[in-house]
Structures are given as structure tokens and as C-alpha cells.
Image (cartoon, rainbow, N blue to C red):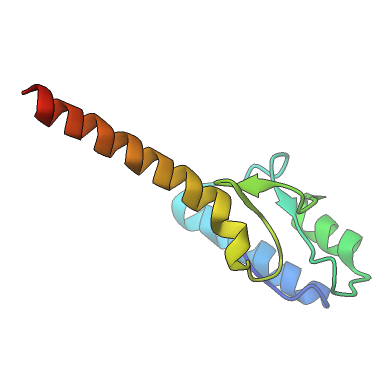
Amino acid sequence: MTCWSSAKETNSATGINDSLKQLQLFTGLTINKSKSKVFFPPCEVCRNKESIAEILGVSIGSLLIRYLGLPLSSVYPKPRHYSPLIDKVMGQIEGWQLHYLLQEVLN
């Protein structure tokens, strides 16, 4: 689950925590806080990082991770960030095209 909020005030974290408790009450689903992290943008001045993490009951994570081959970031990605993913998908499509063309030739 991904939640976006202001990192300037701790009341946003309290609101997210309350929402997660409501989710648990209504669905029975719980957040595994030992596997969850809170991320902060590097450019935003936030003196409440530790307080927010404590309110949420999770640790502070680093945005130096990738998802689907794309770097996770707090800023909008640029087209160049999509190049590795596009190249990978195009390679898969070309492989499928070759496979199906060969099947047509052999049949």
C-alpha cells in the first residue's frame, strides 16, 4: 500500500495511522510494520522524520531502490528513467514476434 502525505506536520502521520486502524477494523487486514517503511523526499526540509516514523510504527527507508526497473523517487520521473523498462519490454515483444513468425513458417 502506498500513502502520500505532507511531511511537514505530524498530524498527517496521525491521520494515516488512524486510517490504517480503520482499514484493519473493516477488513481484518493489517499492515506488517516490521516490513513497512516511511520515505521522505531529500529536497524537503523535514525535522519531524523520527516523530512521523514513531507515530506510524515503521522505520525510515531510503529511496535508493528500484521497482519494475525504475528508480523510486519523490520527484516526477523523466523520460530517460523509463528507458530500461521500455528496452526490456521491447526485447520481450521482439522475442515473441520472432517465436510466432517461426511457428508460422514451420507450419
